[in-house]
Length: 154
Image (cartoon, rainbow, N blue to C red; front, side, top):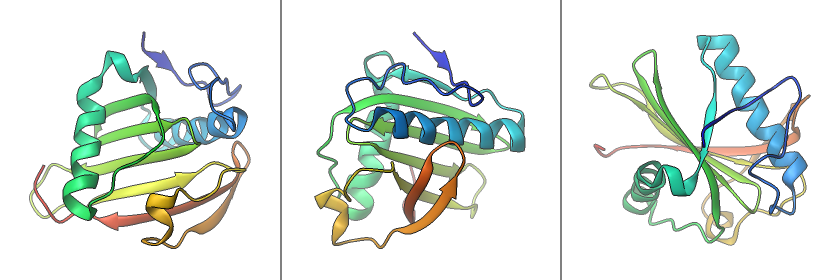
């Protein structure tokens, strides 16, 4: 069942099996706050089983663009369109969050972003391919992030 993420009182709902569930909940709440403040959009997540198409799309982009296959189990997904941008998120049991930002207009910005929850190691499948910058978040503590530009059409 879809769940609107509360960024005022972050919850581990749907993320309980993660060893860094509290930090991942903070990371998810951080994303919810961003979309609420910038676009007045309610950030909603669903269990992967309820929206397998979003997971398949993100998985396809990762595989075709950089030959990346994420080893961790996906827990939740989110997919929406805001201001002409298709957004898709996958939250993984390891504490990893991946988003695909895909501007629908021709020649718009398109990228894949990776965020690591505080307390998790860099996944082996990403460690040799990306450098992760650090940022502070009141909701998520320290977030490490990286990204790459999407070149293909999806």
